[in-house]
Image (tube, rainbow, N blue to C red; front, side):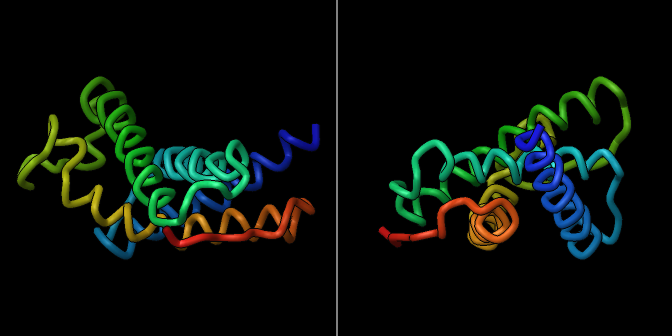
Length: 138
């Protein structure tokens, strides 16, 4: 039960922050992005949970960017293409796939991964008594 509560809290934190990032970046968002963002946040946090801070920070950022990109691709196919919600469309950006993801947004997620990693680690430390975060850059 405690684990369910922990992941629900992390999902809400990550989802709401993701939603507001979209509001700032694009001027609008969709409520489904709270779930997508929360899932991304949880998956980013699982890197340290599974590997206990053995992955260098730069590598965590790269893997996190890939995680977010894959989740956005899956969410885009489901939400935009199958359900026709038209939440986003990256088809005008270079190096896009199906208009759902692009190299440009993956690079943005690489840099946003750093605050997400720190926030996840410290929320787990402060709220759930997990190990204090320790990082190595490279």
